[in-house]
Length: 400
Image 1 (cartoon, rainbow, N blue to C red):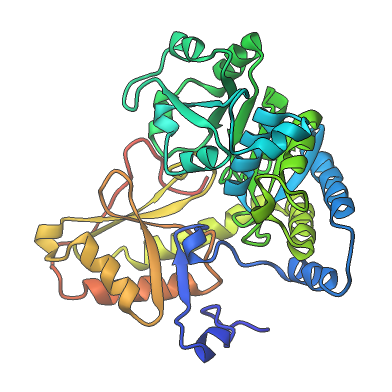
Image 2 (image 1 turned 180 degrees about the vertical axis):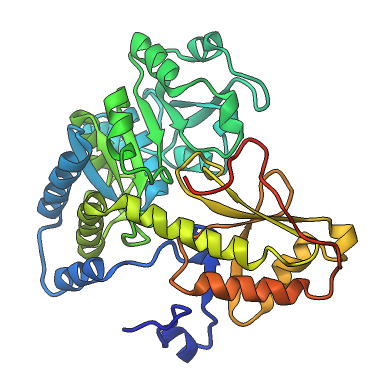
């Protein structure tokens, strides 16, 4: 089905729904990613016949092994489901009685240790498997090695390390230090790398560092099916993930992945490692430049390029700030105007509380011009001061 400049396909118009220009990056609430044709074609092909799901999982796992260098791999119904299955695997191992016991964790290792700085609503995924969550360290100060060491005991099933947690991850121990401590006490480390693509090298990085299980989302930069993801890592723990997951009747039975999603994830993964990632970066840079240049003469508005993004990924973004009082326009009013317009436009609030960010990775060609024009209209007549080009603290302006 063909899309126009704004990405419209017709099905949403027929349903009375407005499509959205997404300038936030990949978010579940906005549909994740747009799948390329070869992924869609693979899924359609998979939908045409039946298949043994266990055998399909094994085939997909081998593709994951080839791409990541891990001992084994397993396709999940998203990264959050991966957290549940990885947690369950570390509690049960391959003991079928323990698998059937969950979420009752009596007599099992049942604690997941996580930095306080990494703690979030995703902690519920560990609890869903039946685990208890033990936080270590501080939210605003650097965590010390002894704090993690003293938190590990005979009840510890795993340490979970969130690679990307906006700014507060700076207070957590480095992953290399966590892995050293974990190895010394024989505790597996689960790395949540759901949004850690790009760079493509991250597909192998955390395994090479020694992580026991690594979880990626399939519905973000991979541009696979939204309800997909995968776990890679130690063979014994991946086998335990499979025992706990569908089509088996473990804690992960409700998190089954369809044959179409498994094949789509594999197609997306194979495609991703073949991509020209420098060319992708050049397209993103061009879109950011068009937005920055297109808004450079708007009174009161300061526009700049920031790089890398807030998680440290090699992604450029356009950063917009303004004096709300002088402009007579608050950040929320701009967000509301973008969300209530036609087309609907979604941008990201800057986490330090100043201004807005425009992410080019989820834009279709030409949408950057639409965004610039809509913002020009919103700011029209809101002040007469000459615009200033600015650079966010600690970042460089210009091409990378």
